Length: 154
Ligand SMILES: Cc1cc2nc3c(=O)[nH]c(=O)nc-3n(C[C@H](O)[C@H](O)[C@H](O)COP(=O)(O)OP(=O)(O)OC[C@H]3O[C@@H](n4cnc5c(N)ncnc54)[C@H](O)[C@@H]3O)c2cc1C
Image 1: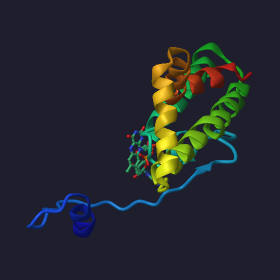
Image 2: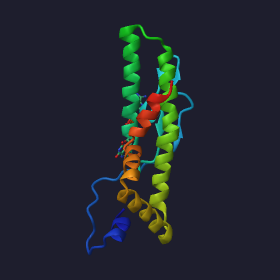
Image 3: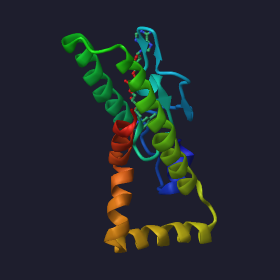
Image 4: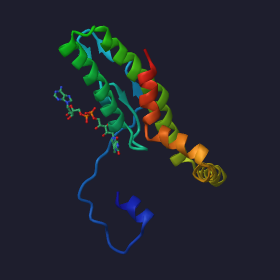
């Protein structure tokens, strides 16, 4: 840790290191979010690299979706098929959005070729400069597109 921090911002004395935490990076989505009365949500259902800060937020979206359906079953005598709908909606977007976006984030951050990095920054600058591109981009990375897509699945 000391070597890494010094490599980033060298100084004469050691940095105090009070805490360190190692974690393994996975990119996985469970093959099903429902087995009878057993339901998966959050990291138990999907896990990804933390670049972009999406995992917890995506888990909260699972919880909103599932709580709404459980409420309909509990209070309004809704069909248990709603739990299969939860699986279809949230598992589909975990594949289409969460996995895709976090894999893309990791590739962009790991990019070592200066020309490729510059091309990526140029792409971002072009998005920022064009409101027609900026809005859909923000809707996608703010995970709003994922919620809309999830709700569109029947
Ligand atoms: C370095 C890092 C940075 C991150 N940054 C972000 C970020 O900026 N934004 C973001 O959205 N997400 C981020 N995440 C992801 C986020 O931390 C997770 O997506 C989120 O914590 C998952 O919450 P969860 O409740 O689904 O699972 P967990 O937080 O894993 O909670 C599961 C809990 O269940 C407990 N448990 C396990 N087994 C049992 C058992 N048998 N009995 C009882 N209890 C049990 C565990 O101890 C744990 O407390 C980051 C992750 C990492 C590693």
